[in-house]
Image (cartoon, rainbow, N blue to C red; front, side, top):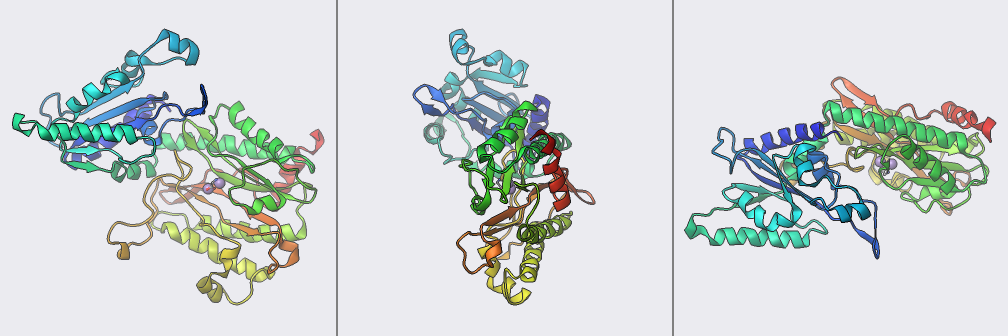
Length: 457
Ligand code: GLY
Ligand code: MN
Ligand code: MN
């Protein structure tokens, strides 16, 4: 992400802090996690930290200071962005990679002030003094040591009241402001999501073209993940699901280690992460290049549900109305093909469909694949209603049907088939735009995409 994008995010966030009385916000990104001995997992910054800083290194802390609206009473409480980072260290950098260092934090990432992360304990109390509110997420896994230190430094401040020292009296969950902000994407963020979508579509098309019966799931995983990296993405934004045959009835199947039988469908749920923003797309491809009649029947039901769900995406419609519409379409389709019996109302009421459709239709999408932001309106729990959609939100629409191989209550021809169709949908001022619609979706388009690689096989 371009640091100027993060600067724009900071500006909006600091303005929101200021409007509510100002305060100091602290965001951390952790150290690298040990994989074994001296080997680490690939590092990925904390999502809030990334959104506000674009600083890509581990072990850093951002402090944002917002003076209350209408006040700018000197350096201590005026708006400031302070970064604590790993200092430059030629030996460490020779072994482990380059660091921006303290100078880089100001010159490249726009910090007003930067310090070594080693000086955090000494500097933080100075930044907190006099602040009305502290925006900080307590209790995050891995933050236990930092939480303890921060809370103890607050106590030390409170203990110095005789010296006139005041510390923040209130700790605010930063997500109450920040996650609402992250939920509504800016034009720059939408541009990044578009790039992620384009690469993701390309990865899915590559799978369709490469797929042949007898291949192993991991070969197609390599195909799709390979496109993600080759085209400059960070890689998959979540572990790619590449599931042949009845493996597709396991919702989060990620072993990806089985051969794909002739006649099987391959479900691929894979999205490319670009600059920290991920797409999230599912398609199903017939290994032989052609759907069987039973696969076709189920697929058409899911496709209809997906299209009807997408049709509900528009400003003012509620988030849950998308699910309700997709679910209704699935049930109507299941009744029509004999997968369920009874009436629409009976199934809606009794939930018999949940045996085959056990998840919800949508989630927010952005820096996190299951992105942040509230799904319900504010207010007392009993009064909450589903949140109306608004322009700039991005959500998935992803109905599915999953018929376990050993489900003797289902007609035999449907057993062992899992189908999900998932697109990423932007809410626009007058409706929606499907960001990932170029991934093949109709039966004719999927079969054509599979045939596209036939010459190379
Ligand atoms: N890939 C995770 C999901 O579809 O929610
Ligand atoms: Mn999803
Ligand atoms: Mn998905």
